[in-house]
Image (cartoon, rainbow, N blue to C red; front, side, top):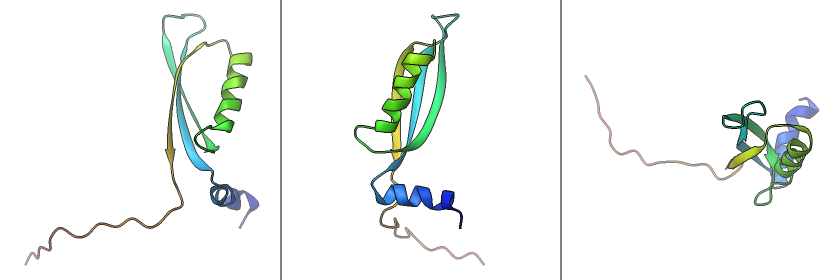
Length: 92
């Protein structure tokens, strides 16, 4: 197993979750048009320090003014999920 394979598990054990942000921004040459950028990284909710670092970088270095940011997260480690069977059908 490579070190890079263990990193997500180590982060998850520390409380990090895979966060996906949809970043909508104004096109620099055409401010009336919006463009979407998808960012994904392991981050800590509810403050999302990694996303905040990225957005700070964006506002300092990228010409496209931010319009909105929507964050979704996925808990990757947790109890198994199951559902009871609704019925059983046999076809002959």
